[in-house]
Length: 133
Length: 288
Image (tube, rainbow over all chains, first blue to last red; front, side, top):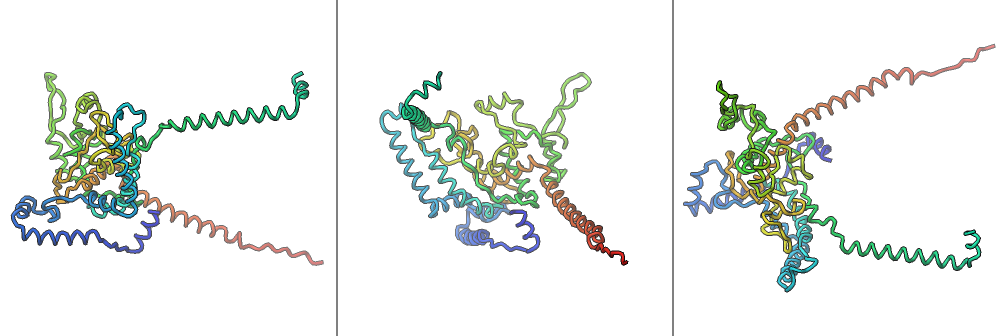
């Protein structure tokens, strides 16, 4: 498939809608404005690293973190998130009961966690690398 | 004698015995299988590890080369972060030349280090500054030292790590970025280990090492965790497959040449066969 895509791309010039970058620019502009208002910190930062983007002035936000949070709250992942939190509640409650240490079988939430992560990953993976350099 | 006694027995009696034994065998087998399935814990999801998703690596495509700016950043991450524990035995400083660094940059880096030189006239060991041909030194003298410094865990050599793990780049990237804030409830970890869902079994000796702003990139790229993980994975993929770019270029050349030769061979075949295929054999019977 990628071979075919490569061939098609090499013949037909393809233009990509680069939404994320535009968003970033907007963010940059807005941070610039805000930095102009709140001058001191940003000026110091600019002195320190002149050629760095304005983006990472105060706090660096990892696109992976924002995307994962965004994806965890999508319709597709909501049920998994719900199950995961339910499991945590159940297991924590169970672990506080008496005789938990001697129990033959102790439940863990690994499977619920995996299902949630799978869902988040499927949503994050195609988008993440457009946001990275 | 046996058959004669069988014949003597009642036919319906035999049928009953057979049916009874089949039923008992079947029931016992299903009961045992059921009991076995109740305690089946041979391979859990945790033991497999979470499968990494497929990321859009810039070198994924059939004709795509490595992102060399990313390799350069990745080397910086390796040098400042990973090299504290992991060696890179198969990469020499000269390998970096024309891939991620210039000759003078690579020379400057290796000259900062000391390597064993030939002994002097009295047989005393000497040291010399590094040369381009020297290999990048590891953090530990040997495996025992590495284990002693890491609570018994051996940090693997990273030269071929991308080839050595299922999932390759996707796995390495997911492993580096996949440390959750806390393990899912109910998970019990052995002492000195951390939880990572991508690591088969979940308990990995390496803790999370990449944090935002850990390194300062010389080209000004924001050093987020995922950016550093992407760069260092690209670098490690280059380390495992230094021939990658050449290989793909040769592949393209081979495709072009072989397919044109194929077309020419078809044309030659048709050209040669044309008179034979088009000839008509006519038989004129002799007239009387």
